[in-house]
Image (tube, rainbow, N blue to C red; front, side):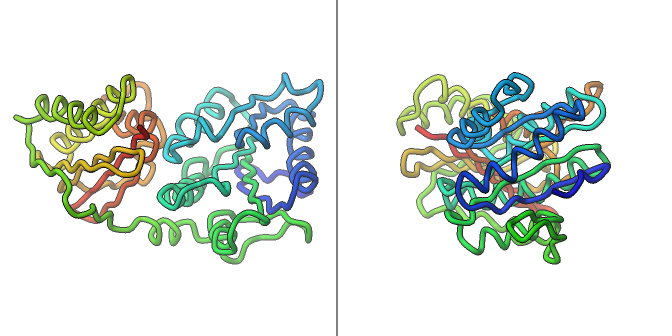
Length: 306
């Protein structure tokens, strides 16, 4: 085991089976506990039970989080899981976070990879260690290759090594690609005058396509936040698109704005800052958020499961 780097560390743990999982995760956790560091584990439910059992009487010292719920939207993991825990503590903190598992959908995966890349931006300079397990038996070689690009070091049976592929900025460029809506979507142009009516329209449309309360209210609120952002920061106008997918409803907003901060919607702004919380709220409400931007154009897409 390599001693935790200071001030920031973000290794990927390549494991095969429960024994290797625990052999990688548990020394990392116990080392933190023995040092008096705040420790959290955010992994899918089955692995969470494995860790909780292995912790035995020290389980009460660790914050245990089911990532399959808290991280259903990869865009919510930074603000609602990692930053929420790390921000509540001064000094060294260590976290086990497993955002990618075999059950992730093709639509979710790019957002997961972007999340892993952004961790490096979000906690640069912070006395923090985030260990991210990857199941080599269940995940494809391309997923593991992406992990080597988003993590500066990799832990495996052969021991820890610095990743020669580490390139988080390149990963973000590769996975932030144009979002093309399907044919036949409902499309509404808007400006300031349509803000109130479009929220109501989105709620009625979602109801017709099977989204029930309270998630229907969340969907309408997310749409309202996105179109308000377009009016305030995206050139005063934009286009809302709505369409159903299998067991989901999807909304997309395109405007003439340019996102200059890759952590927008991922890290809460300072308490004294006015505004800047709309995208943060959208990430917390939706089941999946995807964003594509180039100078002069931003598209944000939200998925809600019916």
